[in-house]
Length: 209
Image 1: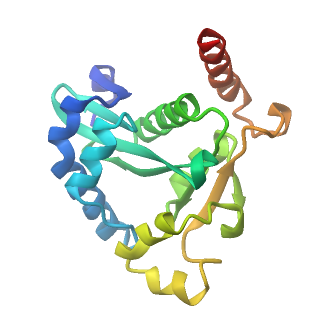
Image 2: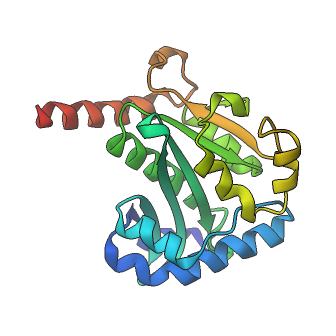
């Protein structure tokens, strides 16, 4: 896609009317996994639709066309939030769209669950780079949620047997964690962006008082 066309793309928090894109989102996720030749947990249209209608997703649109997606999920009684399912239509890659979606998803997670640790497990090097820019750090799986339901969600991944054989201690995915309790100065080079989100969260919490 030409860079001159990126100004017509919108990246926004998903609303219920975006649930019509659930089938396409599942297709994009599956095709991306095949293309990369790596494992990825399969998700059903109903699962994706629930994230959209529940206010836990971000969509990227070119007009009415769905071209990108990501979602969040809360685990461990609110102690952890996972960001998952980041996908960009192949025709729209290499224009910074993945970063925009990732940042919007991070913003959503911080707004919905301001005190939770945010984590991601991925085999994608670009996603790891995006995470690092935003203050995530690589961690062992033992530092992530121990919620059985989260790890059961990996059953659709072709590498699930590796995870099982290692008693959920390691797999081909890399675990990355953002801890809101870590001082900002100890975060990554993305401090200005993290400060922006922190300011938004502070204002929201102040308004709720």
